[in-house]
Length: 218
Image (tube, rainbow, N blue to C red; front, side, top):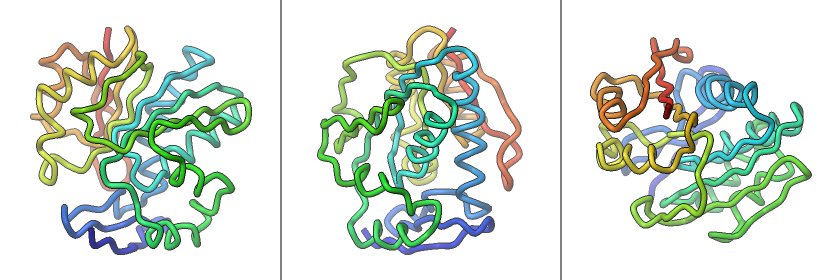
């Protein structure tokens, strides 16, 4: 895939993928979007309820969400068992572009991308990481999760990842009380989430977006 480095409005980088005509993160600010949508509305929300959290990320992408989660786990003494799936892993060229920036100049950044599929990586006492280089349709979870970071490309780019069938799979992957957070707040997406059983919360969005979505399995 042709991938270009783009500097977003908060000074942090993201990548533009020509194949999907999409950026991995918001051009209004990749760092602020990840912190707002996934860390604050997802991880911090669950960490106030329990000291150990099982996370599934739909789309590892640049690895920014994983790095921010690792930092949070170490700073707040929360144990995180992190599982991420990625069908299109970054090339070494793209990884080298990102590692030049403070957000990605992290001692474990390369490990997250270089670890082999289905292999577990322990980072300190608070973070366990496993990734799967496969299609989500072929993924069969071995456990339930407390939190899903739904960070797939937008419905306009990958509509197959925003269907009833896909959200039913996400619902079934969550434990009772678990939640899914996503930057997407389109009406059709919220209605689809609701149709499979989720309770929908429309939350204020990150800079550049009016709303985001948190979906809870009651």
